[in-house]
Amino acid sequence: MFQKILVPLDGSKLAERALEPALRLAAAASGELLLLSIPFAKHLFVENPAGYKVLSPETSIAMTRDELSAYLHKLTETRATSGAVLHSRLGQGDEASVIVDTAVAEQIDLIVMSTHGFTGFSRWVLGSVTEKVLRSAPCPVLVIRNSAPISHLLITLDGSPLSERALAPGFALARCYDAAVTLLRVQQAEPISPSLV
Image 1: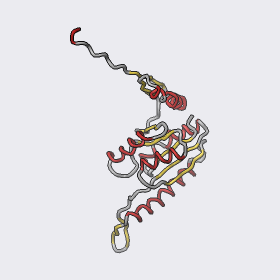
Image 2: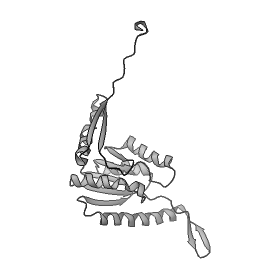
Image 3: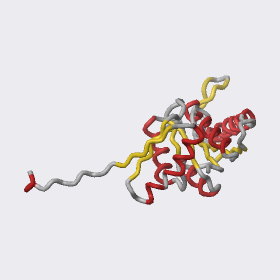
Image 4: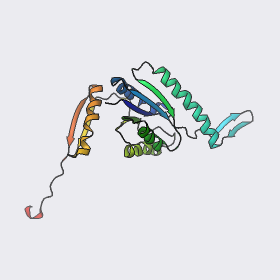
């Protein structure tokens, strides 16, 4: 079901938590994995013989771009035997927008990403990237919170056709991981009339 999977990475171990689950899903479908990085201004200072030197944002982004390019190249080479076809790409711009736009342009079936780890700033800011992707993605998004293997899935339903769209990807994920599935539908209680009390 997941023939094309997108994994946003920033070079951190935290973001790499999404890599193994994505590789497993892509290999199970004999699919493709697109590794995406978005350079950002990370280097503020560099050491030189006279001490530290302040970098311009453009220079910092260029340095980060080179680092991320080498990082993606290494990942695609070391994971080439995973059973999935790996590609990599560098984007440019707002992280969430680039992720969503890439998913649309590449007709991605699934985005697998860590809950945070994309810009190197605070957890609050990083979590907002994931939230924006969840709100705007054209496909299912699997958010990885830790490195524990997936063993049980909870699929919530409300009786609507929209909520039932979670069934096929949920069961596909469960099959890949041989995981248990619980379907949950919570029904709102009917208000009690004051005259009946």
